[in-house]
Image (cartoon, rainbow, N blue to C red; front, side, top):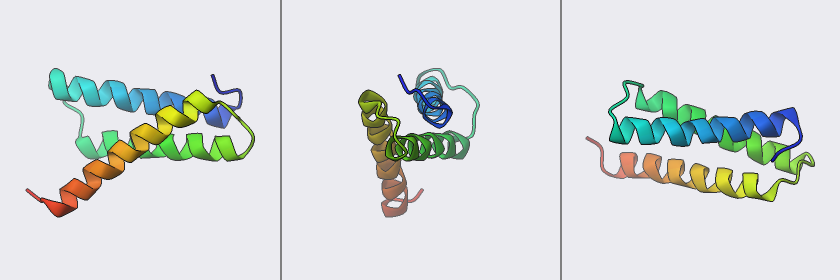
Length: 83
């Protein structure tokens, strides 16, 4: 678990992205997709910044990195195959 405030906020934003994305996908929760993606990117960036500032929670960085990579993959697919 992250020890700094920046790391905790980033970690919880990343977890919130996972929960909101899954609830939108499976339940149809009415939240704009861009808000979910922006929140996930912010959580991933904050977790990465916290890691480089000295908060060495490796699991947090790995989860945030995977989520950030997934978000970037979604954005790349949106540009490659627009609606």
